[in-house]
Image 1 (cartoon, rainbow, N blue to C red):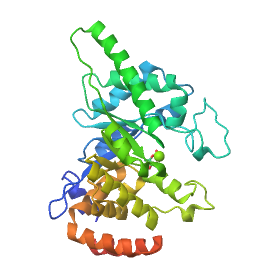
Image 2: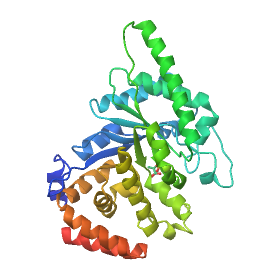
Image 3: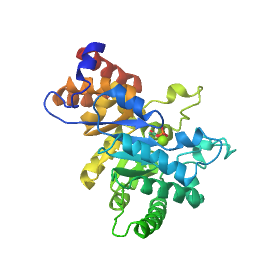
Image 4: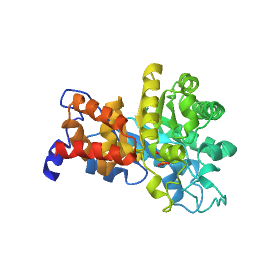
Length: 330
Ligand code: PEP
Ligand code: MG
């Protein structure tokens, strides 16, 4: 099997009957390593900017951030790179910014923290915009959005950063223009599922974070071993939420990708493609495997699988249905 997977490495992810799926990489460190390992794919679907923040002893300066983001854009020149604004808090503390909360996952994390500290958000946004000069491939993604106000406030700050960077650029290089990156919102807090109509006109794309969406939909701390067995993206409620999201995005004509672990899980990827998702972003080591699966199925097979999965009443039944299908693929 390893050999046949390797043979498909540099081929596009297309089902046997011609449905194209765009596969992208999730990254935080080791950009180059992922690139070598995975063969052909369509850029970075999620760059977790908090990882380099977590590796340091203090906040990186604007210049340090700009250099770092530029390295990423340069490594993937010509391909789109989705950079998520700082998503600390919850399970991702910064050693130099201690947080003590009883419920960190329901607390001050992601966009909530950076909107309360606009200077952190603005410095990061300026660094991203400046890094994008000469590349033009940057897309900006907002984590942990739960309300419309947060989208508007983040867009306002991004706009401010845009004009600041543009004015500096024009002073140094009259006549140069600054690209405006596309703006996207993570779908990972359940409240967003019922606000997609209102958010869609304000953004260019959505990206589904199945890790947090599963945790918040099922009210299960994704890192607590006591309840770990209840954390399951194959839960019928999670599958219905994912179906609601793709149907809404199709109706609203907004691009949507999935960047949570479910996209890099063989059964998860099959169900997502069956639902209609056409963009999946995953860690580098899953890309070749998911590509192989996509290249070896027919969409009619996926539809049968999806129907069976939606008839199941328990996560374990869904898994059984999916595993049977995977076994039949080899
Ligand atoms: C997610 O929540 O699914 C996601 C991709 O973000 P993270 O795992 O970084 O919280
Ligand atoms: Mg998340």
